[in-house]
Length: 361
Ligand code: MG
Image (cartoon, rainbow, N blue to C red; front, side, top):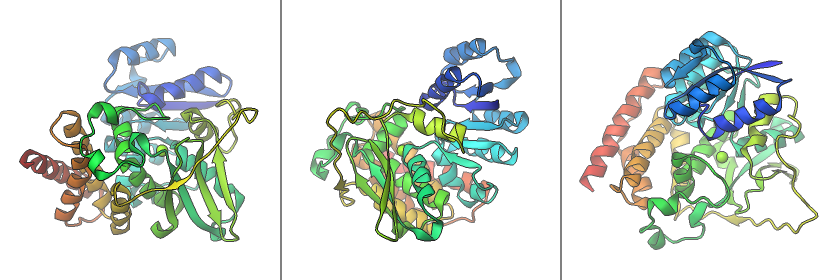
């Protein structure tokens, strides 16, 4: 029986994690939860799982304290945004296995996170990275020639920059295959999410940025692939259901039986792959530069994006203005040393810089 702490338990990943715990009472025991924006749901989860008051945290700071004090076997970090960094660091220091849905904490923390993580201690709860982890079982590190991340292309696949100029928040929230929160759905539409995932892949698997490719696959069935040096490509395929990646991370190194329904090959399947136009969706190209530059640049990329997404949903910024703002803020940034304080300072600076640029537009 593994004890599980679920941070961000009222969000999309959090509620699906609780579904898996409900379905596997012999394998997992919920020992704590945290939430921020949905007090009603948090209260009902507390009652359902008979949790005492002191293991129910509100807000990311209390969540990090809980991760440090509870020492759960598995911490599922489903907090949204870079506010999850403290909880990520606390979970790793407490020796818990970290099922990481909060990719931002890895991206902004960089080596601060990877340096304290033991072998296999971070298990990605991101469908692409879960896929890559599974594909990497097919060969040794020196045999890998390329990681190929798939992208659904979001709602604006094949659109031109002229078409993208007039996109509304409502259109950006209509993701064709995945159901997710507001920020990540918008990030999928701008491809900022894929940019963040390129950096995430580099940090998780240690593969150089020039060997991490992105391909558009609109069905979201092949979740990513690994190319080996003999020319073989290994792909991981399943229904677009986050429960597979969550269950794989929670059960690792064993697979969790029945996490999702298998693909039905008695029905016609067609899987398309097409190149991503990185000149239209500039976020991926920008992320590779940011990832190579390292230091506090990834934190600035992420923080500027979070402010720009908020402004877009408040009608203060156009859709294309999101990546334009990130690029302009990055141009103004001079690198800080990588420390926790440096990351927090760079983020604060980037948020102010983004908002003053947005106000001037
Ligand atoms: Mg993903």
